[in-house]
Amino acid sequence: MTGGSDEWWEGNAAVQVPAQVEYEKATSVEHALTLLTRYGPESRILAGGHSLIPMMKLRLAQPEMLIDINGLTELCYITLAGNQLRIGALTRHAQLLDSAVVGQYFAILHDAERVIADPIVRNWGTVGGSLCQADPSEDLSAAFAALKGTMVIQGPGGAREVAAREFHTGPYQTVVRPAEILIEVRLPIRAGGGSSYRKVARRAGDWPVGAVGAAVWLERDVVADVGIGLTALGARNFAAAEAEDYLRGRPATADNLDRAGQIAAENCRPVADQRGPADYKRHLARVLTARVLSEALSRAGG
Image: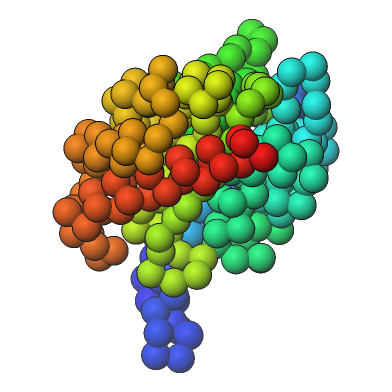
């Protein structure tokens, strides 16, 4: 039985359905860019679809054209290139989790991937799709912010690089223009480093109440450089820059790690919601920051 243009009925439950949309399958990156240019800002890229399709069902997103890039195998890879790890935007979460080279250099990514959603989502959801969704509760955005990665964006005029911390301009907003595609993430490989990610959620696979990732590089027990990423805690660009500034150049002592956690909590702006009050989230920011820094330092020593 029909329940109007926005829903239909299954038993006694109303089921929402997307608005009418056109669909075309891209055969290459160049073809996808041509389609984006042709159909303009009302077109959307379809990768894993685990965020876009639910938004379309709720009519929070109503694109006129879906451009399916799932067949673009040239965007699905994890490779070492000099002193960088390069991750194709169409790489699935499960592939990132299963990669030995990712685990060798960036344990933070394995930590994060283990707590992202469930196996079904990880098998089909993509790294690029998660980043471009720009959800404030998205785990990988904070992890890449901590690692100080670089995003490669392809457009009709060529490729450009954007720092991970400049990629997101606000909730559900990025610097990717209507006729552009995120094609790759690049992570610098540096000696003497370790990383970690921890998340508190109401149940396994849920969006986080709060989460923190950290990467630390040491020189003679002094913090030479550090990156701290915060998820769902109201941190600008997913980063705790003030806490990083405090730690850089200081000995890696427990007191300094605790102080960095306090600074991270003082400078984040969590929002009270169904997952918890703001004060509790600030408490998580403080405790989790100190814990992931400690674990990252332990891994750096190893």
